[in-house]
Image 1 (tube, rainbow, N blue to C red):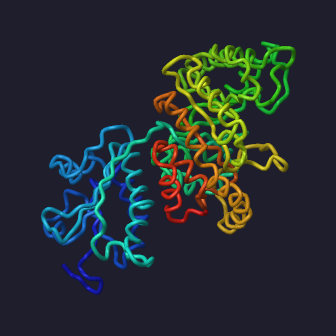
Image 2 (cartoon, rainbow, N blue to C red):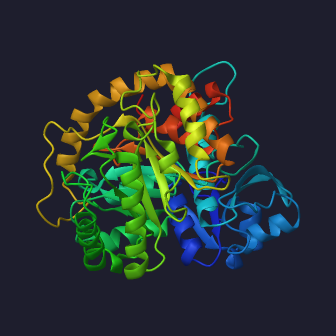
Image 3 (cartoon, one colour):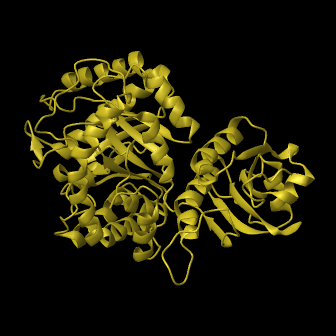
Length: 484
């Protein structure tokens, strides 16, 4: 081997055949670590790895046992744990049995998501800690120039669906947005629009390539004042919404519909009727029409607890094939402002009831807040279709500087109240055994450009809410480029 000027302690990425899942993983890992070494980083397919390369290089093997023969061999020889749960991953750093002067870095997932999360965890947690592994000084060790710390990590998510709820027009770079979701091990995004983006199909395909489901938010009369006592009027609203989906969304390959009704109020009645009872009537009517015209599509009903909290018996009548997505269930992390923890215990008790309202096994879903939201003082509804997530870099940077003032405030209260978010998520996880969808409202916060501390902590808790909160907060801060 030609050592040139950089010594012989080099690394090589070993993937399976460079296509599909292997290409996605190799590209993602290469983009994250190529800048850390002063030479052109070598990548090879497992079947092309020579004996000479295996003895000369430190090997970073990435992928799944099914897609990468080298990883399969490590699993078969019991050198690494074989991940089997959905989205589970193994990260192991150990001496190469064929040459103890070299190391193997195994980044192994049970599936695409698991493999991507192994890469994210390796780059976001392992490498930052490996760079600062001295006992007596705080200077960084250059990664991969000498032996790296051993590691043996096996993890799977405690909440099965984790992600973000946002309006689409405040995503200014959809590719960076999606990749930052992967960095935080998120797999679901709900995107609300008044009108479907012209590039929606590209967005869905890009998200799917990173294992992220896309659910389109569509207004079933949300934002309009109408008589909820008129079945004829309700049917017109549902018909218009379904027609919108048929025309503008059905061909986009999305993973479901999220909609809201008339529950976003503190009032419990409207037009002489109970909002809770009539919302259920409306949703069940919508389900029948959607099934008839769209088939068995995933349907999510965004429900604001403020108007129905005293009438949960009515809400229990919601068709069980419709997922109720709860919002505004009380104190932080349901409150917009992360300092608002008044009546926290009362909020926990409410959530316990809501989680099993329709019996054990219900798919319980929530939108959590306490991060960033739209500025409703200047909000304007979209006038027509637009192109989502494509903007000039200078405009993105200018907007980022304005949003950081908001994040500075948000982050400070996440430092104070992260334990409250953890406890609330534990309550939900324990009530549902983790079979739930949990999204965080992150709107107009330039998430695509910078991941802020509050978002990082939220994601860490979603992934593993049983971990010590101090460790969670430390891990959240360690991720490179996190803004605190």
